[in-house]
Image (cartoon, rainbow, N blue to C red; front, side):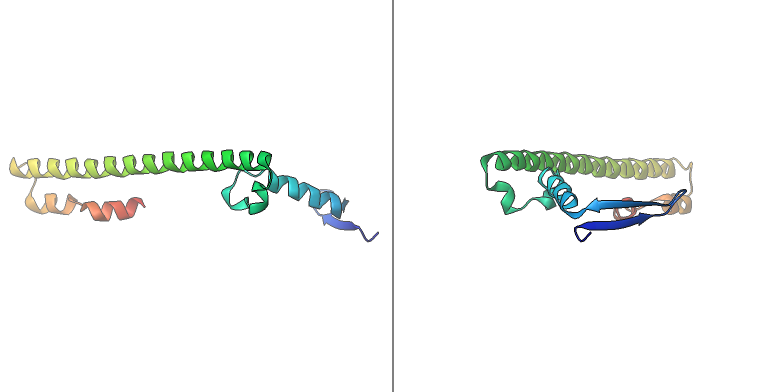
Length: 120
């Protein structure tokens, strides 16, 4: 049996699974042709109009997902920066009203750069 691959799995019950190599390669080809990942695409995927259309849709969805993700990350960063600014402003107000000592307010203040580095 030269065309067969013998794979052994151990678990609760030990079983022997014989897989035909040609069938396994066909399964892998199908997985690659129907992939939704950008890195799996190749020039062969654009040889026929149907493949090109399918792969173009994949690329469009990936680009739109990345744009949305990038937009959400920019919004999150902006909100966090604004939050730090308002908290620092709150500390300044408490310090001016003498509700908090200068030493305590300075220790609670966090520069925006350090907070951004912690978030990422």
